[in-house]
Image (cartoon, rainbow, N blue to C red; front, top):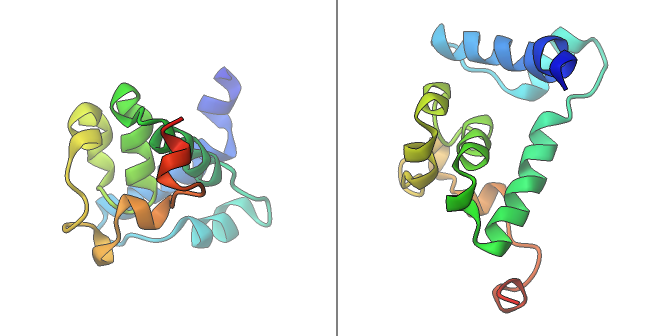
Length: 119
């Protein structure tokens, strides 16, 4: 885990992605994957979306605000600086202010009906 956090490809690409945001030139993870990883695949965004789906289905987004905020950041719903204030990021209304009018539900849709998720 320590090696992944300090030297893994997710950290490396996230660092470059954040630098691009800070420079006012946001780019996508797909572009950075090609440029930085030279053919290797990035798993962090996919994993974050899968975790977020589970949190949403179980109504646990408020119990895991860091995961929720990170998912919103990596999907372009919040700027990277929100990670530092992740509790506010998890409760922020991103529906109308999202990049390109995209919402949480558009990024990580429910795969089961809401009634099944309540069980």
